[in-house]
Amino acid sequence: MNILVTGAAGFIGAHCVLRLLRDGHDVCGLDNFNDYYDPQLKHDRVAWVKDQAGDFHLARIDLTDASALDQLFQSHRPDVVIHLAAQAGVRYSLENPRAYVDSNLSGFLNILESCRRHPVRHLIYASSSSVYGANQRTPYSVQDGVDHPLSLYAATKKANELMAHSYSHLFGIPCTGLRFFTVYGPWGRPDMSPIQFARAIAEGQVLKLFNHGEHERDFTCIDDIIESIARLIERPPHANPDWNRHQPDPATSLAPWRVFNIGGQHPVTLRAYVALLEKHLGRSARVELLPLQPGDVLNTCADASDLARATGFQPCIELDEGLGRFIDWFLDYYAPPIAHAPLATERLRPNLNGGVYDPT
Image (tube, rainbow, N blue to C red):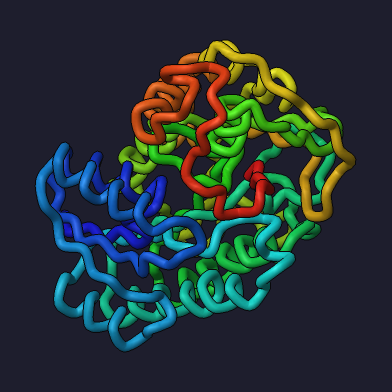
């Protein structure tokens, strides 16, 4: 099939393009290569994909450019759209909220409009576990309400689900939203905890753990995310004939619309997470325990049973194994001092996010 992947130079996007090319699809990528973090990492991901699976068309377009986006749809005529581009990060949404409105709301509207004008078989888009917000009951189920987001980022992801539903209802666009739970792995974002934490441990710098390290996160290996997406591509949602207006199921609809959780289903505390990183790096962390930060969700845990029923697959890579793969890549790509001298003081590449990690 012809498949358009937005955010193709991003963490999940690059892995997705690689898998699709290997599966024999015709892939068109889109990315704006913005400087939320070092764009060189994005260029390096693209080079890695091309080295592993061959060349593919990659358009440098911003989602807010509706005209350029529509021209890309007209020329490529995608059968499926996998929309992974977004302004990411919980804490950055406190500093620059307009970036989230522009990319996650206006940009997503442009994607929906292009899918309407150039009909597609399936629109798959990234949502987030952050939509569960103030919910306390775990594991999080797609049958739970998600009306109390704790950050603007989370609010935009919930809005994406609602926007997709309206277009699915009005124009019959089959839409599937994927609520990702703390994705990690090789080529990850430098503002997320794996690189932030590994960098601090490797350098011997103080590692700041908010909520005194008692957060629990449901970590999900990138390979499990990509396998889930690959299986969902040819499973567009259909209207649920049993949907009850008086007792509505939040995960399905009378429209061809669905949402799924994609999570490891085995949450661990941040302290236990750090212990695994210490094990794979062979060095102890210097830890500073700090209070809960605004916008943070205390605990996350996915119920991925709906995904398993729909695809026959659910995330299965254990955190210890997945972090081992990540650390192998981290040591190779960043070549930190620990790789040759555990007590060296040589610096890694600059931390572009001011030392604040994003646990999402």
